[in-house]
Image: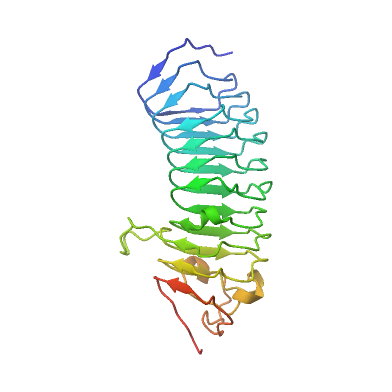
Length: 273
């Protein structure tokens, strides 16, 4: 096995790819940069007192199962394709972005704090978001069995929901707004936008919805709930156009129903209304 002395201080960013002997790191390790651990089959844990000034990424480490208690990081945390990673410690504090992808976790930790964006990708065991989670940026959920978005997520910088087939409820007065994002083509991205794709069970938008950017709903009738098949708000991006049959006019339908209180600050188009 690899052995390290304590009190190591590293002054560079690096990745550790395919190290079959690596199991953990020494106590009191400091890395002034990023830490990426990739394809390490016997890696089991991060030391509780590890200090990393950059982001931490852990990918395809099947023996990695959890994080230290009250885990904190100064930047972002990415965990993906760790097939035995099943639980989080309580009270995690992620100052940057937090991404969990393709792991068999069943729930997010209580008292989770995320300074920037929270991204949940292909974690089908997660069915609910904790009521005490605080997110400072946006929310992206893909291929999850989440049933509802709770009220503590009612103010976000962007919202991206895709393939959430059990989702039935969004919070009232949902606001998608980024006060620090300038409204220019060069700086537009996900910020201030609301994307909703393939959420079959959701049949209505919440009352009081406010979207400062664009509201984009995938228009293919086979991929939308009935309440959205006649709705088009926002830009129809090139990525969305490829899902439409070539003969389909993307604005050929009437709008069936919108909330009583709806604000969209981006592009809204009505056709043959």
